[in-house]
Image (tube, rainbow, N blue to C red):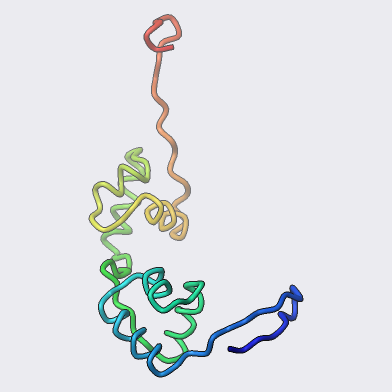
Length: 131
């Protein structure tokens, strides 16, 4: 175990160095597509940050069940057109396989297309069922 005092917080920190066996097991779990949380739990580590750091440092590739995909020009065009039609992020995501509402909203902002407008539901103040 390595123990030191954190330079900013002043708290005592104890870390367990990575053994050859730990790294071999980490590579096996990563190749099997296990999540970072699962790998941390199985290896007895308290954070996914330590798992990420070890994977970067020791160049261990991690292939998840849902790898990230780059946005295609066609998807970017669809985002613009569907947004102009008044669809919200959730509705657009439902039309785009592999995308969720958060990534749709993020991508629109990244492209400078602006935020999607929330759709207002028209109602009649005179009709008691609408109130």
